Length: 178
Image (cartoon, rainbow, N blue to C red):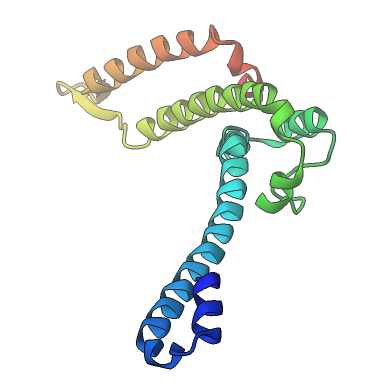
């Protein structure tokens, strides 16, 4: 287009080419806009690729099972204080040197996830007992009462004994062993 502009501007009959010049200028403006957009897209792409590389560490740190002991360990690994209650934001995580610590952070988060699943299983066991009821039934006409309808309670007890024994075999039960 640059050469065409010189020819059109210096030529004796450039004025009759105005529609062609206008069309080319509009096309060039569109191309320039696309190039500016492309530069913005390239910057966004670079930021996005950096974020994607950090995603495993960020996902690990955002696990709902992360407790204070896990945050302390993550802070030790990263070398900077990190805690959701301490004002740690996603932005501060992005600026931290997380890439070097992804494997260690995933290990901490994996431990947190396993502890969390045990915690949830224990909570479910407690809620399973809430509707359990023991019925006292009069034994014949003796004035003595016996516990009746214990089949469901016995099944629940047996099931929870097996679950408890399995949980006690896990190394991740230690924080919940009290």
